[in-house]
Amino acid sequence: MDSITIWMVVIFALGFDFINGFHDTANAIATTVSTRALKPRVAIIMAACMNFVGAVTFTGVAKKIGSGVANPADLPNGVEIVIAALISAIIWNLLTWWFGIPSSSSHALIGSLAGAVASGAGFDAINAHGFVDIIKALIFSPLIAFTIGFIIMWILKRIFARSSPHQVNKSFRFGQILTAAFQSFSHGTNDAQKAMGIITFALVAGGIQDHLDVPLWVKMSAALSMALGTSIGGWKIIKTMGTKIFKIEPINGFAADVGSAGVILTATMLELPVSTTHVITSSILGVGSAKRFSSVRWSLAGKIVIAWVITIPITALLAAAIFWIIDKVFF
Image 1 (tube, rainbow, N blue to C red):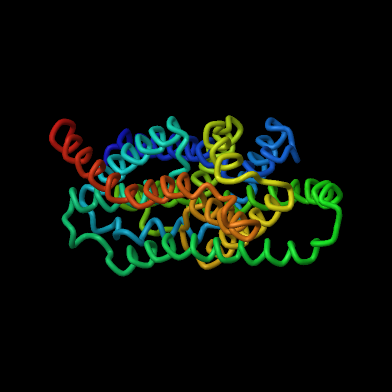
Image 2: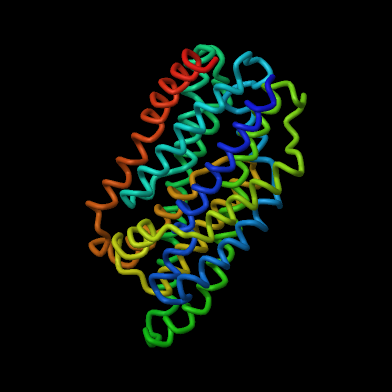
């Protein structure tokens, strides 16, 4: 396999990770910024640091990405497939970022990889069992996050029902600093591993290595790339997540962060890739529903759900088309 082609994969994967960083930074710090628990620049720097720490801590999700959708060792054109998948996922991430839509980078990558594999090696090359496991995790994790967010907020409402709202919010504004750090750490443990997994997929497909263990240089470069992307921030999505779903107060932000970070970290421990965007948004919706069901702007929530639903099929078709172009024009 041409080393230049492998390095193209590495560059595209790190580019995806970088974009994922500023695309999904909003998810980790939106509630903290919107309640003014932290100034935006301070929140972003903290998120970047904690993303990096989380990214170098685990590798189980990377192995799942590297083998869940397809076996890279069985794909004669696996590197080209990865390139097509990454280009597709990057295009979708940039489009949704531009329009301020909290779409899922995870859905974009999984959908793109499945579409590129189907186009390049046929549907039989897709690992049906592994792919279904990944889809299950992507589907059920937001539902769990919504439920947990609702329960945490319901409990907090009853505990502090007779307390001064001003004092409660003052206390939870400090607590939000801790939960935002926890949120950013959990984001790094899951999302950065997706780029690690896709690079390792290409290394195996290209015959560079014969196992799915993530090399140290891959782990460090992916973690650094996501941290750098995080340092830029995604202000359009921060505005959507932190202000447009419902009016978030510090106690609400605390509850949403605790619930979603717990779900993401649990998924990481189980080596399951989940959408941090979906989990965090669902947790915010759950918290808002517990606060007051009518306070949630459900029309906006519906638009976000539509983006969730269409991401995988659109990116799959886009990746399939990109692979066809790459195969016909360049190889």
